[in-house]
Structures are given as C-alpha cells and as structure tokens.
Length: 527
Ligand code: NAP
Image (cartoon, rainbow, N blue to C red; front, side, top):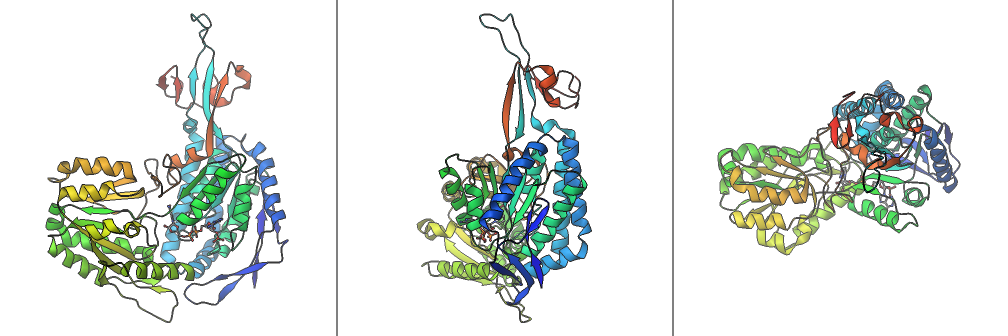
C-alpha cells in the first residue's frame, strides 16, 4: 500500500501514528493509499522552515521566481499518467476533465511567471524630492508592493489540481515572493502528494531555499486550525465551503496579530432571463442552462443555482422542463458531498410552495454516490419568504423562480446576498432598458455576465473570481487571474533611501525597464 508523508521543505516526514485512507467515491472501499496525519511538531517545523526560507526567497528576482514556477509546471507535466490516473480514482472526475485541469494549472503557473518576469506588477511609484519647496521641503518617496510573508493555502475538493496544491493560490503567493504551506484536501491526498513532490523537485532544480514549500495532510481540522493560528503565518488563501472559510476567517481575526484570510466560498450565481430573450431564444437558453447546472455533476462554485424569469413565459417553463429531463447526473466527489446534496434537496422540497419541476437521469453501473439532477421551482413570494432558498446547494440542482414584471425582478435582485457571478440574458433591444438591474448586480457580484453562463472561468488579467460576502471574505480581490497576486503583498514606502539601497524596481535609471508612476505620471520603460 502506498504511504503518503508530509512534505516539509526538502524532507518527507511521517512522525505521527494516526493515519487515514483515501477513498474512491464511485466504490466505497479505500483506493490504496495510507496517509499520515501531520503532528503538531510537524506543523511547527513546516512554519519554521517557511519563515527561514521567506528571508531568502523574497529577495529572489522575478526571473528566478519565474523559473521556479515554470519548473513546477514542467514537473506536473512530467508526472504523466500517474497523476491523471490517481486523480481520476480519487475524484471520479472524467480523465479528459483532469487532463484539461492539469493544462489549466500549468498555464496559471506560466501566466504568473510571465507577469513577474516583466515586473511592472509591483506598481512602482516615485515622487522625487523638492528640497527647496516652501513651506516644507518635499522628501524623496518611493512605493512598491512586497511579499507579505509565509502563506497558508487550503485547496477545494472540486478542483483537485487548479484550486489545490499547485493551484491559483499557491501560484500567486509564490509569484508574489511568499513561501507557502498547503493543507491538502482529504478528498484527494494521493493526487496532492504527487503535485507536492513535483513542487519539491522543481524547488531543488531551481535552487530555491529549503522550506519555500510544504504540504501537510489531515482528515480533520486540527492542522488547518494550528496553521492559521501560528503567529508566523501572515496570510491565508482558502477555497471551499462557507462554513470552513468563515471559521478560518473568524480564527484569523481573533489572533493577537490578525491576518488577512482570502476565502472564496459558495455562491448561487443568479441568472435573470429577460422577457424578449425568453421569447426569442428560450429553448436555446433552457438547454444551455441545464448544461451549465449539470456540468461536472454541478460541482462548480460558479454553478448557476437560481434562475429568475417572468411567470407568463409558459413556453420557457416547458423548455426548461424538457432540457432538464435530458440531463444525466454522475458520481459526486465524496460521500459527504453526496449526502449534503441530498439533504439540501430534501430541505428545499419540504418548503411549502417549492416543487420539483423536472429531474434528469442517472446511469448506474453499480457506482456509489450517484447524484440525480433536479430542477426545483417556486414563485417570487415563496422565494422572498424563505431566504434559505437563495443559498447554494453544491450539486446538479437549480431553482427557477417565476417573477412579476420588471419591478419585481429589480426587487429580487436588490435582496440578493453577495455572489461570485450574476448573469443576464436579454435581446440587444431590451438590455439598455435594464440599466438599473446592472447597477444593482455590479454591487452584488464579482463578475456580471451577459448572454453567457458563469461556469468556465477564464484565467487571465481581466478575470474577477470573487465578490461581496458571503461569496468571499474579502470583496476587494480575486482568486483567479493575475490580480490574485495582490492578496499576498503589502505596499511599502522608502523615504530618502540612498540609491544603492533601493530595490531595482525603484532605482533612478529603471534597470528592469518596468512601467512606473513618476511624480503622478504613468511612464513606460525608460521614458
Ligand atoms: P471544505 O469542506 O470547506 O474544505 C476545504 C478545506 O478546508 C479542507 O482542507 C478542509 O479540511 C478545510 N476546513 C474546512 N473547515 C475547516 C475548519 N473549520 N477549520 C479548519 N479547516 C477547515 O470545502 P470542500 O470540501 O471543497 O466543499 C466544496 C465547497 O467549496 C462548495 O460549497 C463550493 O461552492 C465551494 N467552492 C468554492 C469555490 C470558490 O472559488 N469560491 C471554488 C470551489 C469550491 P478537512 O476536510 O480536513 O476538515
């Protein structure tokens, strides 16, 4: 049986006696890996190494850090079919999806490598001195972003590569110059271990300090709680449930030294179908909605779980019903996720006024944890009277809410809580008449989408994967795209610093040829 140990910098450690098994969610028996739970001493050692490594790593140049990120991508590729097979067996996700997710994870690493090689991301600003300014002399002031310190990362169950050990949080923290300790998700520990080994190897090959990266395992909350409470940890990146993210946030603000927790949590991702769109292309929209809700067995944080449309569109109701009947469910990521899905559905169906509008299929080959897609329906009044209906059910389910005319739609939008995304489908003619709806939605969501669906998150410099609470614990940031780097930095000003002591980004002759703000004017290269 394969044994999985903690990766603590350059050492592998199995000091504890407590172990757990990784499971294959489609069959209930263990899938062959035995995982050691981290001990308190191992957690402390990982943090100590992270602190020591930070002093060295934060001073590496953008090119050196970029070489490390690129090497991680290469080692992930070199992990070949073993990584893919292990991940498929731990998550029951299809091979093609995992292959795509590995490519996405590697591209994220390369995207951050490009960003830090170029260097302008530090947002350098220079205000030159005016010694004879009256009434007071103006000092020389130079501003830039620097790494915040050792960062703890919690990966989610539903993206075992892209939001996990070498996912966006780790890539952005390493790019910023922070050292990283990952708490592996217990639903895919063997996958995590392979990726952890790839990072360890990449660190060695590119000459990174011992402790730049560590990976700890636990199937309970103790390791995570100890890490977030450790005084030397300076920030936390989390992707997962509301319950987990909020608990860690509360813990972090109660510390003697509070630290930022960037928790990306659940979201219901409301979709508004305007009357013209329902009439003109209702069938197409219904098919696309059903596909979006059931994609990946509905296990996406961007799953569009609520759909609002005007009640007189009876043809559209029929299209939704038909579209959902054609869908097929699948094995969920873990038994606890499958159970939570069924409990969530039963709780909703127990609400007076909520009905099952349609259900999809399940094709069983003897697998366990097979979820059936279900589309629920309710009126706007029932939705208003039962705020729980607005919460996320993680799985292939949605609720369609029939509304009155425009004012009713606007009222429902105003009462939404914070979301990762909000979507509107409308015709070119009717969209301008809904300016008020967009004014409301941009206050509610991190991403406002027109005539598209929220699943399928592009990874680039213009993406926001975030949003107001309770979608996240910090609405000012994103966990996807290059802007994710700003979560793990803090600005520092140097006043009257001698030229020889200034970082290259702030030296007079701009040796890195980066874009900078000089005396309030944006300048490119050596301008
Ligand atoms: P989860 O149960 O919250 O687990 C995430 C990680 O946090 C695990 O390592 C877990 O450790 C740890 N954890 C949870 N509660 C904790 C606590 N109180 N103290 C310390 N550690 C704690 O999340 P999940 O299993 O991935 O569940 C899926 C959820 O994630 C869905 O609701 C989905 O919408 C959300 N999600 C959000 C995004 C996004 O970007 N916003 C992306 C993907 C998924 P243990 O399991 O060992 O306790």
